[in-house]
Length: 581
Image 1 (cartoon, rainbow, N blue to C red):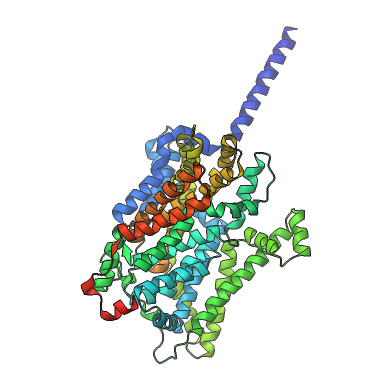
Image 2 (image 1 turned 180 degrees about the vertical axis):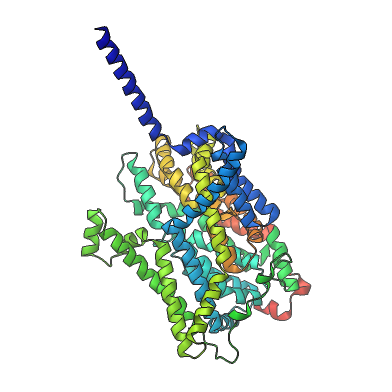
């Protein structure tokens, strides 16, 4: 009996040990690190962001930010020197992992290929022809900014494409109108993610809808996720207000904060770039200037860019169609078989399409079209065209380096559990009327610290909808809270110097990255504050959105008009400029 009892006890202990091991395997490493390091999980993003502002060297700042994170992960209570050594080796692993990710590789190829396409268009004189054509219509700084804003709205389907297309096209026009590169990059950045996030068809919508659907399923509700998404749009205060803010600054020609200094420098002294800018931004490369004697034609720009946009739209459908048909969702498969061109079918295919690959394919096809056009017009030979294309890609290599480091930092932050730490610290017992505002602020903080709006949405949406439902089961309240997650993530990403869209916007405008961040963050914080004070707080108190949104818009108009100061001194404005205004 004793032996049998001993065997039973031993068996129970082994079973318990196995159970503990099983549970240990299921523990989230990020949560373990968040509990272990606590406040130190904020070190990598803080190092990267603070050093970026101090040194104005983004590559160095991101590298040290990644290194501080890998060092913490390697620091397991053993040798400090070995932690430094292993942390350095881990940087290489993180960069390689970032490059090996198909999405990231597609984004880098997309950036490089669009850079080559823009170089070809410039060489054929298309960019100069577009600039001269727009300059005839954009006869003042006001109209030039409005044209840039409209073009940003037109390229609504993807924020990356927006950032890389609008800048090179509008840069010659805004330079001629003496608009600072800082203001150009702000307009680009403020129309890229904000419009893509609320467009009824875009590369964002599939991800946003899937998060909404899964979060509602967690509370036992099966909803039409697309309808919920549409219902969140009026509550996406930041997205809407930042778009209106751009128009107000353009119409009133008033600025404030660092942007006022930049605009006055450009308007009064003709210096669209700051004195600290690298020489590569001060003048266009001679290799990418139009050949002398060629006849300028806007079609040399319109056709290749039109091909890029049209091919991308077709690519989104085709890629998404294949993804759905190769999946297991019987309802969607049946939809595509019966109504392949219906709005719902197009929406679903766009939602699941791989934007990184599609835009790369579209840019490559558009580049081939541009090469054929240039050679057929005898502007250059095939060998010269390829050399021009490669030179255009070289100009964006630094963008690829920055993106790789930014993604590596994002990976390290995720492994450290920075977002989980922030959620655990900042969430708690929340009054009903404050929840949307707190969610908006929390999403902004996480997105700013991590440099990713997608990651922030993925972290907070599964928490927000169940929490909002527990506080109040009202449909409008849950929808408002969901909208706060989506727009708060956009707001924080918009402010962050380590965000890929922020990086692309500065590169597309030919603006120093830190100068772009310094000028933009004041405007973003202003609009973010108005979003809370005139949007989420009154909406949380039960004021209907059709009342809060117009009031918030009036607050934006009043802020620009009364806080902003005129860019141009009356004595510096010529009679022609006055007439144009």
